Amino acid sequence: MRDGFVDTLIELADEDERVMLVTADLGFGIFNKYVERFPERFLNVGVAEQNMIGISTGLALDGWKIFAYSIGNFSTLRCLEQIRNDACYHGANVNVVCSGGGFTYGNLGMSHHATEDISIMRALPGLTMVVPCDRFETRHAVRALVTTPGVGYLRIEKEVPIDTSGLGIPYQIGKARRLRDGRDVTIIGAGGVVTDALTAAEELSKQNISARVVSMHTLTPVDVDEIRDAVTATRAILTVEENQVSGGLGGAVAEVCVEIGLGVKFRRLGLAGVYSAIVGNQQFLRDYYGVGATAISAAVRKLIG
Image (cartoon, rainbow, N blue to C red; front, side, top):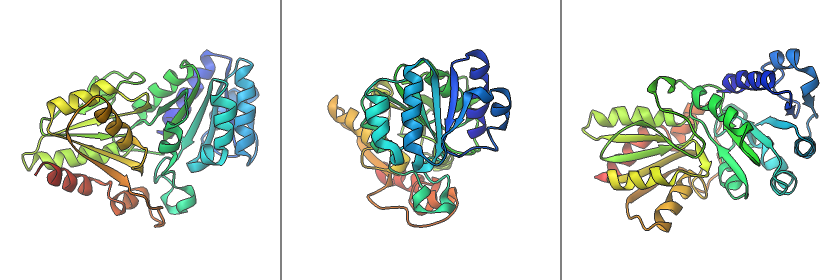
């Protein structure tokens, strides 16, 4: 995922001299190729995320197309006021990049776990939030965000084992991608945890449970049509995310169901009002906090049983 972001950023910078990367003292190894080619369009502001957003907003209002990069919570919660007041309020073309969504930096502890950002960033008017599930979606998201008016939020991870590029499913901001069809339940995920959703769907198929898997890569705006179809075509909906369930992907899907009057069996998987105080790698933490493949399978069986 992260390499896909960097490769696409280099392509965009080669195509458009207004594309610029701003970072808060992070990403030097992965940005070497970018810096070598575009040194005049790389700005390291130091360990100062609030300044990163303020400077990025000023540059964007002057015509630059900015990608402001940091890891974990540091690109969002550390500088939320600046994102809200400076970038979003003024509709600046600043694309905030979180490299390390969810439990990506699991071994570094709670301070580096991005598990509230989806909920918080969803609340900001004028912000487009994209949470891709693999390299394919990441590359397309970067290209889409640079031409999307206003502030963008791109939440990526380091690496994921799946590659959906060969499925023939197009990518479009605001349109979910159905990675697997099914008739009994729809599993909706965002981010790398979609990998676990696909694994769970395969295991469920051995138990004669047909699970649809949807990558809801855009959280704002969420794909209302895909949610409506899931309600009418399957018996239940399960959402899964590396984020608090309050206000996250599950909240977004639930809001749609309630507002358009769709009754359906429904459950959200994610952090349920707890901090991720445990340390471990990403998959360990997914399993520990109940968003791994085993937990997804168990939740589906209970939901439709």
